[in-house]
Length: 210
Image 1 (cartoon, helix red, strand yellow):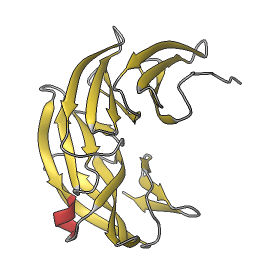
Image 2 (cartoon, one colour):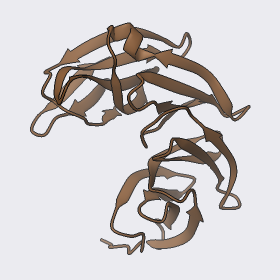
Image 3 (cartoon, helix red, strand yellow):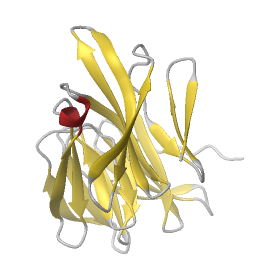
Image 4 (tube, helix red, strand yellow):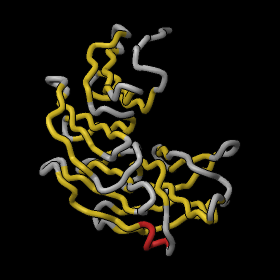
């Protein structure tokens, strides 16, 4: 029904719907792009870093973005401006939000960072690598079923030795379950619905019931 030219370079990132807008973590210029779905037009482009930005989440009346240098940007949708930046020690451009926190995975250190929107600071570091007993890389994550779901992988040289999903209880910041996947599934994201968490490989989809 519509094609929207966002003029964001050659790479586009994550989409998130919230505040009666669609938010896009866009490509080369590192802009956050706000789209009005009522008119199918770009109504704001907000600089959120000098490098590629992607991860997008909605929490605490704010829109959150992350760039490849592991900086988290908090955008106020009332003014379309960055109001806070938060540095994490390591990271990918994935992000997710629970009702009272923003979550950002480390890259190859196996740590999931929990950001408190009330203080704009890291409130907890969850060492998933220690839980699975190996140096772990973290990929996509998603909140659903009152839990945070995170894809992880353990590499052996150039090959993946182990793949899986961990379930984290946001009340305790602890891993409460681990579900292994075939080791050749590679990197992919997570999504969650009313009763299940979902993840995928190149040619298969896994459903994990709550």
